[in-house]
Image 1 (cartoon, rainbow, N blue to C red):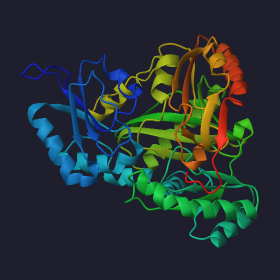
Image 2 (cartoon, helix red, strand yellow; image 1 turned 60 degrees about the vertical axis):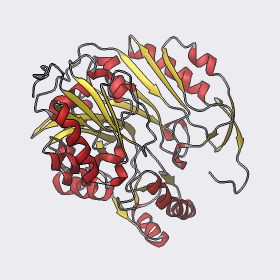
Image 3 (cartoon, rainbow, N blue to C red; image 1 turned 120 degrees about the vertical axis):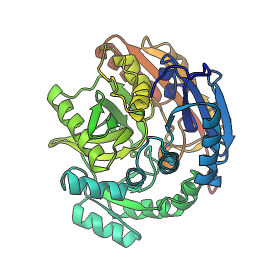
Image 4 (cartoon, rainbow, N blue to C red; image 1 turned 180 degrees about the vertical axis):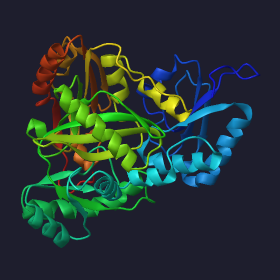
Length: 433
C-alpha cells in the first residue's frame, strides 16, 4: 500500500480502532505522510480526539462486530483506508474479527484469542517452546484447588486473573492464609470488574502460578509472516522491587542493566513466544522475568506496551507506531536504534485506598534534572487506590537523560521521594471502592 495521495488528492487514512488513548500512540505517525482518524467507542474511558485527526467518528462497539464493520465500510467509501490500528487491550478480539471480515491485515482471530487468555498462552508456550519457558500454573475454581497447587509447588505463589492485564488484582501469597484471602477477594471482584472493562465475553479465569525470582523486563515485537523484529529490552521496576507486596509497574526504564548476551537471549525468546501464539501480523508486547537460569516468559499482549513508544523514541530514536503500521501494510519495519540515550516512565501508586488530600514532594520531583514531563490525573478530593485494586495511575512522570548513569541517579531520587508522595485519607470501613 502506498502513502501517496489518492486520485482525489487526499492522503490514505490510518484508522484507530475504538480509542487512541494518549499522544504516544499517534505522535510517531504524524510525520509519515498519512492522515489519521479514529472510530471511537462511545463506551470507552479513553475520550481523546486529537485535533490533528482528519476523521473522528463515534460508535458504540457493544453493538457488535456487524455494526463496526458497517461503519468502517462507510468510512472506506469516502477515504482509502491504509490500515486499522488497535492499541486497546480490551478490543484485540473484536479488532481481529472486524479486520478479518473486511479483508484488512491484522492479527488472526485465533491469535487474538490466545493473547487474551493467560491459560491458553501458557499452554502454547509449553507446547511450542518447552515446559520451562514460563512459570508452572493452573486455572483454579476454588480455594481448595489453589491451596493444592501451592502445596505441590511451594510458596510463595502468585494469584492473578487470566483475562486481565497491567497487574490488576495480582497478588503474591506467602502462605495458605494469604492465598485463601486473596482468592476470596479476587473471586468476588473479578466478574464485575471484567464486565466494567467491556470484556464480559472473555472467560473469567483465576490462575495460580509459581513465583519466579528475578528482574522484570519487556520486548516489543513487530511481526510480518514468519519474520519478527524485536526492539531493545526495557527494564521494569515493580512494586515488589520496592519492598511492596504487589506487582504494579512503578517504572519502565532504558537502558537495560542486562548484559548483551542476556538481551540477545531475551529477544530471541520474545520472537519464539510470538510464533507460539500464532501471531503473523501486527505488534506484540512480551514480558519476562530474568532469573538465575535466564529469561522466562510471563505473558504477551497483542498491542503496544504502555509507555513503550515514547521510551523507545526518546532513548533510541525508534518509531514503534510507524513500525506497527508498516507490518500491517506488508512493509518491513525499521527498528534499528539511531542513538543511545536513556529514558524512563514512572507511575507511582498509593499504598492504600482513600481520598487524596495532597501530594508531598511533587515540586521536588519536577525539579529533578531528568524530569521532562509530569502528568497529573488525580487531584485533591479524588479517590485513589493501589494498582492491584483495579486503579489507574494518579501520576505519570517522564525522565530523559543523555546517559543511563544520569537517568538512574534521578530515578533513585524520585523513588525515594515517592515513598511519601501521597497524602491519603483512608476510606471509611465498608465504603464502596
